Length: 136
Image 1 (spheres, rainbow, N blue to C red):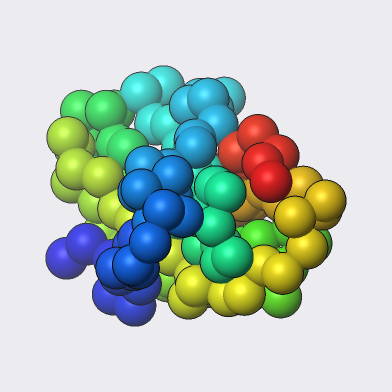
Image 2 (cartoon, one colour):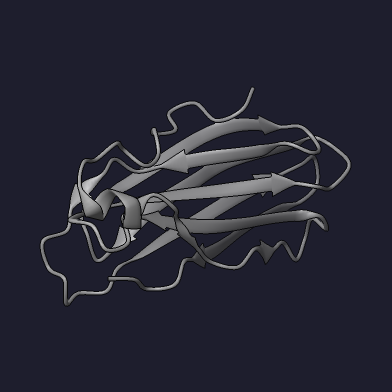
């Protein structure tokens, strides 16, 4: 089963800011050092809008099933975070975790999405962090 508790991304908004906020700005894929083929990234929605939302994703290209103990998503420095747990991720699948949309009333403050993933199999365990670029 893939991620329970993932938030809906990119809420519908009216006006010019909705068009600017329609696509996320994502960080680079960060590869696992322990599980070759596993990678994760963080994306921030709401660029140029009066709201922001974070989404993280983890892709399993290892060739075998992995247990994602925890996948987190957060907004820095805005007050939003999410934690998705106990995800059984088959090879070739991607799991997502997202925060709720929160107001961003400071156009001079740059924000970013952050995330961590903790993965295990029978003999190995790894946790690593990743983030998106900072956006206004």
